[in-house]
Amino acid sequence: MTRGIISTLAFLVLILYNKSMKITERQREILCQIIEEYAETASPVGSVTLAKLFAVSPATIRAEMARLEALGLIAQPHTSAGRVPTDAGYRFYVNNLGETEDFEKPVAERGVHALEVRVNSQSRADTAIRGAVDALVELTGNLGLATIGSQLYLSGISRLFTQPEFVDTGRVQAVAKLLDNLEPWLREAAPGEALNIFIGQENPIGKNSGVSLIISKFRSPFSDRSYIGVLGPTRQNYLKVMSLVKYAGNMLEEIL
Picture 1 (cartoon, rainbow, N blue to C red):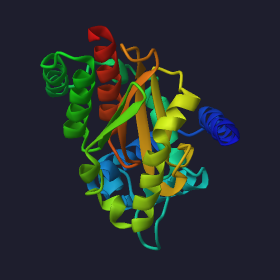
Picture 2: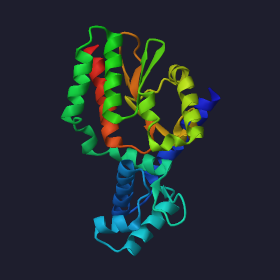
Picture 3: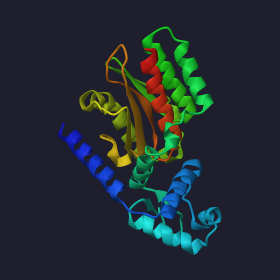
């Protein structure tokens, strides 16, 4: 319980810090571009690439990057490399996503169709939930999960570990520890938001695993606090994944 309280306090402090952080509109756009480019390529993003996108000089971009790095939002993995987002950078990005109209738009037609087919083709609540999880795996490339009664259903472990982040066996072990303890933690902590996002060090277990846990709470025949979601590297398309997970939770609650 103490560990859960500490994690929650750290999580709240980070949110307050991000909300009070002052950056310019261009710095915000550069941060978003770094996050989205890194999600696609898994390679550090350099000033030359960004300079072309923003139609300014590489020196101007480097100055803006220095400010973002000083704020702890991006980091340079090694000398002469580009920049990658930090956990704080992802948190800033996710907090701002939640305040945009784009996040409230329906997910892509393909995602809606895949989820609805998997769920509507099942006659039982448990198989419908499993179907939704399997669809999330296919749509996101992450590991999918859901609580069904007192059990935790997992799908797509092999998909998760094909991501380049997990060539490091230490990270794989940290993910395994997180998964081993996830079901009892969900039961104990019972996250109350409709959509919950835990990024990197915010995770209650496996803090060094470099993953994000995105889960939606929904009511089911098994519990008023059932959960469905995904676990993947911090490097991912948050707008897409958050929208899909939220849609899956809402759909299951409505159907079940």
